[in-house]
Length: 368
Image 1 (tube, rainbow, N blue to C red):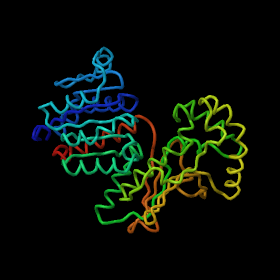
Image 2 (cartoon, rainbow, N blue to C red):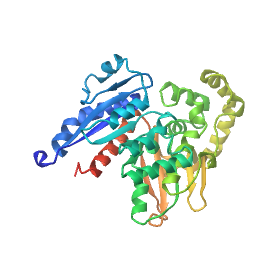
Image 3 (cartoon, rainbow, N blue to C red):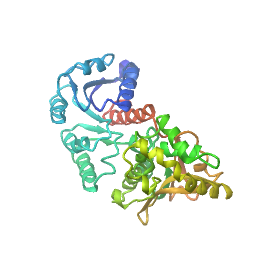
Image 4 (cartoon, rainbow, N blue to C red):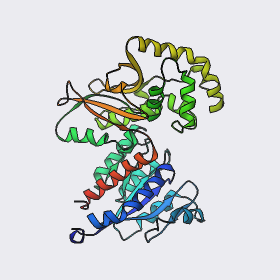
């Protein structure tokens, strides 16, 4: 079957070979032979750049030694030069740049890349939740130039969240409300916190296991959940800004200006009683505390904060760092459509990016 398929090659650029970027490159290398044999799809990486150096080639890079080749580079990172390189590649004609950073600067290039006919894939939340006018400009460039902009992994790592919303809308359904546990970090914390365990102890444990950002306040502030709420709300055609989300921060006010993450964690135990009281109140009512994002599409109201759910509720039955989201729509009422699974980690996030790449290839005629 593979021999009968039309051969199609795609030139790929990777921006940000960090944890997710490295995992993605490893997955692409592992699956390259299968994709070529089964689908006639050849994945060619022609450029990799981190914040300091970049590795560029008009021939496909050898993925068995890309890291050592990048380490030896003396070509300083420059996204204008990176863009020019990809624009000047003649073969393959199909090109994709994948932004695996959390940078605010890289998304500024999305519209440019799209205007050059280069598809863009990213797990980066900054564009989807950034200024509305920038987001709309990218969506307009996507339509005008007939290219793909996909960011599935920006919300649920490898979970099919954005694609589900698009499928509902394409079939004429209309999402009326959605809510979910969008943070793998906060999921882990509240799956392990309860009466008898100090909140500060669980937060420190989560940090030690690598579930939190280097500074746990970045997770506990609720901003990450708010960003995902905005991305999904916009996918439901709401024109919202990040500041429109009512966010409940779990960082005690006196500790918000602590000089370091260590100082914050040292001061957190003095606020354990407050969180313990909330946990005990929920426990007494047969409930569990969960940090959720919620959007009422009709009113446009967006929130992110602590809620208590009955222990038999799907949101109260998560484990580890699982994410879950419930969509209510014209067709899915009163029983919602629920998506649940791992919501954090480099491997599953990279898998979500990989899935977007396959979707682009499918749209170009491959993987049929």
